[in-house]
Length: 395
Picture 1: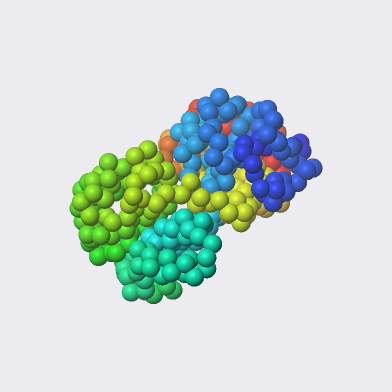
Picture 2: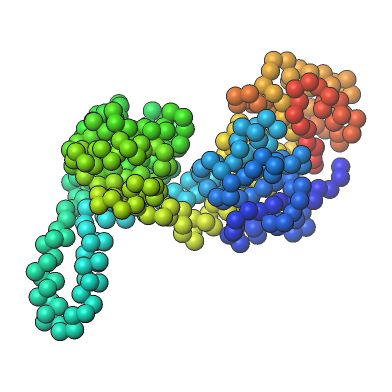
């Protein structure tokens, strides 16, 4: 079995802690590498021309993969990873800051005090401050209701933090996973539909991925269910909110304030809008966590074939047996597994363990064998129609 030297190309600035996960005796890592086995990136928009024939995997140090041509990757047998939950605490803390900014006019107060820079007499300064502070009067979060749309890694953390602030928390997520359900505090009131949540919430915060079914989720129709004077927070993805419909809701009082992490034309100077420049994951800790998680997933995939947190491949984990392993990707059509095992049987190869899973149009197989696979065996499996790629390595 030949020894592998893997090449990993990086885009953007990847945290050093993440890069250190690649051992220098097994990996060549850099931004100028050609024909890489893997790509590690953050926000760089990957082009189809970046998907070279050598490429096996792409890892996005973050949750969203809108900058990766996932469909093209799937067609070419390339696994795409993301890092769900790695930046969850960073986003949660920004949402808490947004809740506080939405309930207390801290920005207005700070700007007012700055406008007094020419006042040098302390007594006069105190008089002006006392006279004008009523302009910035706010309200407490305690006792108010927060509707959390999406109860995954971030949404569940926001829900727990809001409960600690004394808020009543309403939650909605029709696709909640078992793990997420276990993480969710029992005090969160599960709502059966979005109109019910919107009509009861003083604040609504969005934490759903951008999918065809969530694009424009907040639109003219759904905004009609909002409680008059409510606050909408969007720290998920910009297209989840229909901008024109939102402007209408702000004008008629259905929504009093919109706080989001995504500046868009038409909203940047709106008096009822507070926008931040996409700061959700912009903390040192989040960048390090995402880089480490993405790197670890690439290392495990390249060296064992196991797949964790892929957006286009099934979750596959097979404990290494200390022998030899084949990783086979194929189109998800009937009879493929039988053809593979027939090839192995014809060459008298003993299968020690095997795992086969599929997702959509692609299937993935891990096959542990007792003897080292010879090149002829690999060629025979590659020759099976609908096989996309075959990898072999010692585990």
